[in-house]
Length: 457
Image (cartoon, one colour):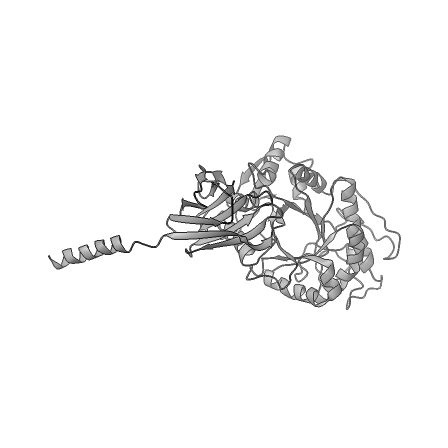
């Protein structure tokens, strides 16, 4: 036998006796992790008006976009709507100073709120019952800089005195009144936020709070919000790690800790790197990736394609243990980083929508994340048990080759797994169902692809 032949024979023998280790994955329903509140989006800053107002899309196009965002059978099935509480003279419920913080309020209500009322009513018809109303700023007359934009602080907070007086209680009542107006339109606001990115000064609606000031105002708002059965959320910092000092300050104060139901952080300035320092609910409450052009691609390396969103959602749920995930714009215009681009009476859909849909359509409110482990470092895996007993197993193959995965599902009565594929060609597209045998099934995940397996008895 020649040397070359001997080497070839050894290679063949090795391949027969030591096959490459197969990828395995285990789902354990009894290993319970965090509960999921839902997934959502916003149409604040007039985006709902672009969709529905006098210059908005035609009714059929509106319905198509609503289906894409809210339908549980053909779209993303979003379950949280984030509403922007306006503070400008054009959209505030009290555009003018009533005469001081102790004067009788002079609220106004147009029953429209830049078409956000219409959008909320539509969302409710799709089954949404979680409405998060969030203020970017108080009206300018309540602030140290006299302007609803460009930062400034709420008059009356420690270190923020104003000649006009202490506006803390008036601002709290203002926020609750906004929720009361929505109740008149058949929408129950469930969550209220008094600040957005309190550590960032923007040229548009913005207002600063230090962590200590956020704690201070929480204790003013809490009793007033409780009368309207509103859950208080704080503080929507512009970075996940940047939210940590606010959460720590709230946790350190026993009164504020009792009041704040949900700790909310964005991921612009810092990504999710771990859980926030609280045992309360946490939401990734706003983000869209950086990008200067409209992008509909799945996986182009741009950092604002669909693949990027899939990874971000996975990280928030598994590394951050987030209970909720709220994207920024559902539909916007121009070079938007939203999920959908409105274009006159037309629209375009980004793969970002379908990346999110693989989570939001199948992981329903009050689901519980359960144990999910795999031997393959290229496989980003998570699993969730819904209240109806179904399981959603979400697998993102970050590798450049197809992967055959052998799943073992423990402590479940599931007998069928229906895969839904998102990649360059798939848009949360249903694939042929797979039968489980003894709690096991084997399937192949294409390279750079996202699959959600819906497991049912």
